[in-house]
Length: 229
Image (cartoon, rainbow, N blue to C red; front, top):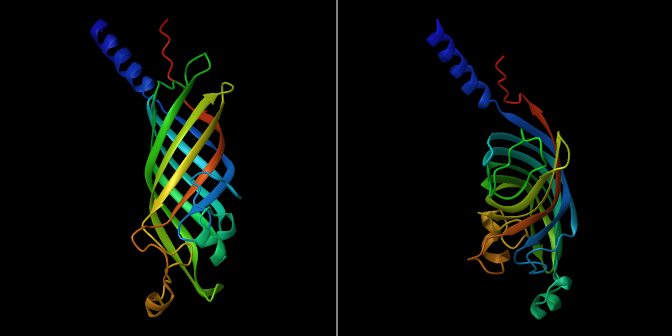
């Protein structure tokens, strides 16, 4: 019985130590676009970006993460450092809804069960998909195609997070999205009939956009605790 008790205690200790902590919260910040129209600045948030985020912390060093973000991408040639773009004077706005899923890695142990405040830089990557409207330029005027498409991409995010209480975590992050599309800014129409006559810009470079902002998440779930008598 003694050995069985030891085995049972060890088993339940392992099970409880692997209990997970979840995070659910919000993202608030700004977005900016990088493509064939508008400014060429990499980090220059100009439009509001908001959304929700969920994390499943698998260990103190990594977690699975899902987010749903809303924003309006804006491109203004007048804000570009390129004189050619300034003379051209194109501009657009394009609402997007982005769903992203992947894994977050921390540089330091981020143990949510610690009784002390914890903080660490982190990296996140995975896959993203953004729904956007399709349009093209006709003599400088935006013409809607009355359709929408999905732009798949790879998010590359660098951030810093810290526990501000026993249940809340605050983070600041900057994240670029490399997309496999060149249609977000209207430089390439979605319609094949218009591609040859209405396309412009660098056809070898796809579109990018970034989100810069803060997240505030609430932690919940079972804390690992084994307290033998």
